[in-house]
Image (cartoon, rainbow, N blue to C red; front, side, top):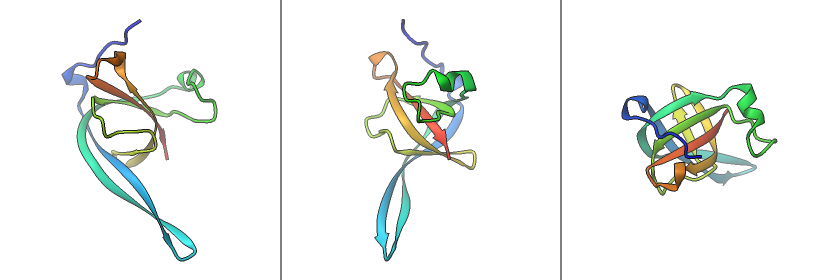
Length: 108
C-alpha cells in the first residue's frame, strides 16, 4: 500500500541537516558538525507503540521528519530542530517516487 505524500502546508518546520566528522585531538576525539542544508520539513513525534514497530529493536525512533527528496542525506547524518539534535537512523524514499524522504530519527 502506498504511503500518503505530504502537502506543502504540512511541511512547515525549518530544519538544519548536518553531517558530523570526528577528528582525533590528543587523547580525545573532537566532533564537529557541518551544515548540509536548511530545508522545510514535516515533523511528527513518534508514539511508544510506533517505536515497537520499527525494524531495529535496539534503536529508539523518537521522531519522524519528511523532506523533499535529496541524494546527499544518509543514515547517521543529523538534524537540528527547535534547539534539539536528532540522529538520522533510517532514510526512506517514500513510495520510491524520488519526491520525498522520510527520516526516522533518535533525539539525543
